[in-house]
Image 1 (cartoon, rainbow, N blue to C red):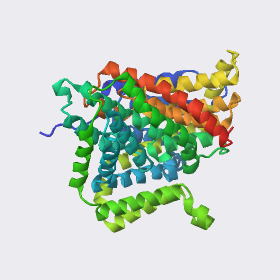
Image 2 (image 1 turned 90 degrees about the vertical axis):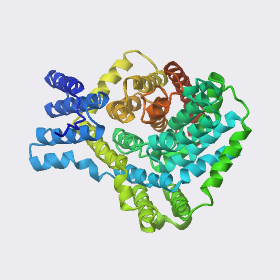
Image 3 (image 1 turned 90 degrees about the horizontal axis):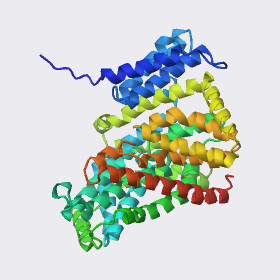
Image 4 (image 1 turned 30 degrees about the vertical axis):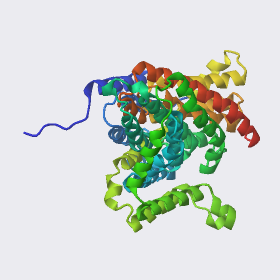
Amino acid sequence: MPTSTSDFHLRPALIAIAIGFAIWFIPTPEGVSSQGWLMLALFVATIAAIIGKVMPIGAISILAITLVAVSGVTSDNPGTAIRDALGSFNNPLIWLIAIAVIISRGLIKTGLGERIGYYFIAIFGKKTVGIGYGLALSELILAPVTPSNTARGGGIIHPIMLSIAKSYNSTPENGNTSKIGKYLALVNYHANPITSAMFITATAPNPLTVKLVADATGAAITLSWTTWALAMLLPGLAAILLMPLVIYLMYPPEIKETPDAVNFARERLAGLGKLTRDEGIMLGVFLILLLFWADIPALIFGAAFTLNATTTAFLGLSILLVTGVLNWKDALAEKSAWDTLVWFGALVMMATQLNKLGVITWFSGAIESGIVSTGLPWPAATALLVLVFLYSHYFFASTTAHITAMMGAFLVVGLSLGAPPMAFVLMMAAASSIMMTLTHYATGTSPVIFGSNYVELGEWWKAGFVMSVVNLLIWVVVGGVWWKVLGYW
């Protein structure tokens, strides 16, 4: 008799349903329509289901789409209701991330990602801290075209880190992780949130932030790929430069000199051989994506050579498919891309409807009145907003759920308090990645690296809090000065 393969968990489902009904039965506040209040109940129940891991996030999103359509919360007309429920799937940002995830599969399939990692180790690997910089720089190079930060940090960089640690016989099984493995594992992880903050295409939730920023500002601020990358460039580089040293001071490795690591990396590179045809094409696509995302062809040849960021991603994938670097089976096998397409579309839809139905305006007004009542000037008030947003991530196991639940309202409040609009939205965008440092469940990369058992739980949380403070200070100080130079405030 076949066994059930259901991934549905009843207890957290009942809790999520109870939360949804509890909100629905609360008297509707003044200024919010009954439809808006029902949408809020559905939305909070969905977030609770994601946090409680009732089912995989894609499956929960299918249920959310179904409930929005069946309930008629957006329209009494059934045809309009389903169109509203599916409305976000024509959003180019959603397709940008899905297509970029498929493209990033080529980095693993061709071995180009591994080659880049060992190349940096061969250059910087004479000292342990140099290996740390090699891992961090590999992350940085791969970040623009790997919107799955889990694939980048956990699927490409982590195996390289493990192979180096094992070459020094530093393993959890041997009880000597502090020899070198603990340091490398922490650097491996903490490079991930920094690079995720630096490019729209470096982690899946970033385009959601772009959408929420546009909604909160009435499209007065629309962050392009180039604007985001330029704004985050200097603080990101400063954070990458400082992070391996901070981790080194906190958890100094017993092995300080690592001349063998250079030879190890060179042996691995020799084993990979010369750059293959597929790696060359992958590298070429990598460069095409970066050039068009940065609008370089348009700057040189004129506006006729401007491509939308999503169009550029489709162009890159098309080249990989035509040349055979990737085939359609590879694209279909990249389940995370199609999963992202579904859950991203559902959450963007619900966030958009909450905004249309006036719930975000009501919620942000309540937060604003609470902060105004404290009498704090706008710098202190907006700093409080950023801190609350960032450190509330201790209660979230999903950056997407966190951003969807809180970012829109917090943006509206910060802007209404008088904060310089561009500087504030960039700080919130950075905070949405900085918060990944905090826990062993903060983002998809964390359980992968924490699960390798090189770092104890207390050590992980301590390093996470310290790095959150360091990164926050870097973005406030270096970012603030840099954005002033760029004329953003």
